[in-house]
Amino acid sequence: MTRNRPATLNARLAPLGGMDVLSRAEVTRLRDASQGGLRALLRRCALAVLASGVNTDDPKALLELFPDFEIEVRQRDRGLQLVLSHAPAEAFVDAFLEPPLHSTGYADGFGTLYTAVYRPMSAAVEYRWPDGRWRQSVDAFETGIRAVRLPSSNWSSESSHEDPGQENSALPAAG
Image (cartoon, rainbow, N blue to C red):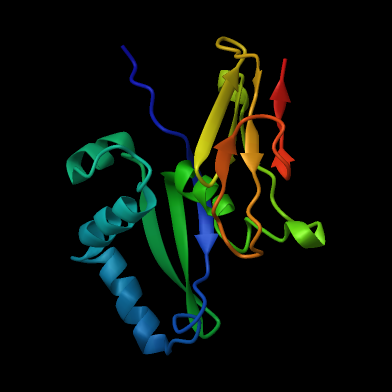
């Protein structure tokens, strides 16, 4: 029986603020650590941070879920770049629910109503809000409406599911 593994992706990240300007010696030390004796520790720690949405905190179980995960430190101008291979995709999806990608500027017409995660391999979609999710699929389609109360503050991430008909509601509908 083949165990379903969580979705993964490859990414290149360039840190901002403090880590974007490093000497060659500092980057070399980090790169050497990522390739030498500290490589396994860096890999486990990075995976633990990226897999925060996975329902386990057991490092061995995480490595079994993401056996091909790798992290590499590269020199980039006067800073560094992290190259991630087979990283947990869920970590990057969650970023869409945080500022600046998730905006609460509704009064200005620029607020995020929802984030949609399309999963074509499983013929499914998941609509997400900071405090909730609604999954729909071809195999398990659920007719319905979700009403979400939009926050009144421009930078608050507070929202709550309310009954349909409330003012300031975003209503993704299915059916």
